[in-house]
Length: 290
Image 1 (tube, helix red, strand yellow):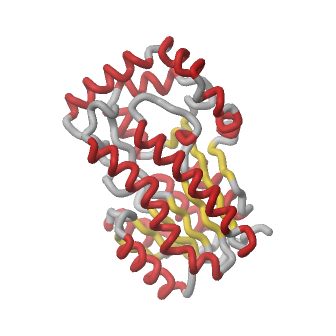
Image 2 (tube, rainbow, N blue to C red):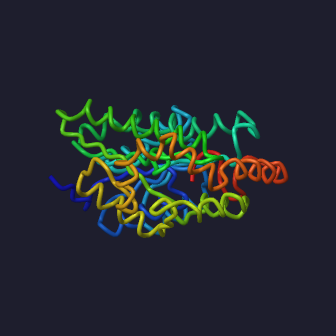
């Protein structure tokens, strides 16, 4: 059965910018009550004022903070019908350039943050026989130099969602995982601006992995996925081909093809660029969610 969002409560993490903020706008336009969770109080307050929603400043790696965010949302709206675990970050550089704390932080936010978010909100969403949307990525199906922690975390997110779906099939709760490709957000723009090597590599990727999608188009796709209680949302839809061809994409043949197109040189150039930058995250990225 479709999920009519009018007068439903949707809680979104990573809602200060990018996908989360635009999803809040699109959901509010459908008549939903919106709760925004994130690390940046100023943009959170601005988006909440724009959509007439509730906001709560919280790091998704802080369970106590998430529990409070959920309690605050329930107190304001009486329950939670949909939770969107969207918060995510991406460190820049290879495993060799580290530092290890940046790699671990990416996994902690992207994967553990999803686990904590869903665990905090699940009793309320289950009681509402609602929907959980977990934002993974096309990176769950592919590998690219400089994205070790990001790809690993997003693959973990996909499997977490798959198991959560199986666990709740008989409870009336539906679970979907979303797999966007490059979305025109601050996070992606930061990486492109900081690393010329990364920008060059993205342009060389085969279709559809070289596609860039607007944040508005992405948010609409996610919202349609929620309304349709879809188990998978691909942005764009052609990313479904990448998942279907994952054994090829992650094969030895693909490794050799990446080498042929300069994969080793890409890693070396990226390491040099990150060394010159002297930081592990983008200029406008917040090390706790986008």
